[in-house]
Image (cartoon, rainbow, N blue to C red; front, side, top):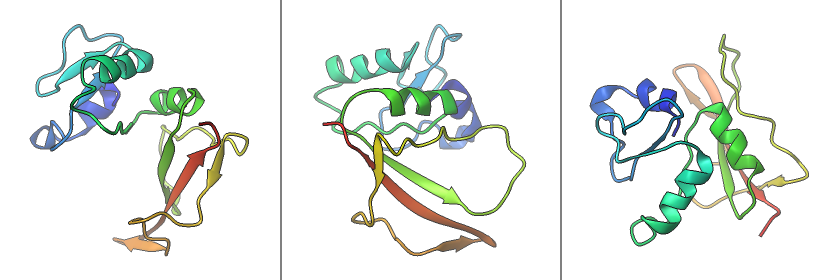
Length: 135
């Protein structure tokens, strides 16, 4: 996750449980308190997972921010995008980059992911799973 995403998580919930928390930052010189690792960029984080954490990590989840999503979506390799599509309008300043139809296809269903419209506190949303064409 990016540095701002890390600091947007309430301190009592950091680090995220049952995960190796890697924070990406070009400005920090040491992992923030509670984080397990620090990487300067997306490729360095992937190398850390492939080399140093290979025996402990079987999946990599990217949880933000926007530039990190862009790096992920443009990188080669097999990947899935688990997207929560919020159907309400909000004043915000961070957005998911456009999902390229040339690189990703929307799956009609995915095990464990509800396909029906969800509502929570009056906010409607749906879960979508995209899979890359690249192998």
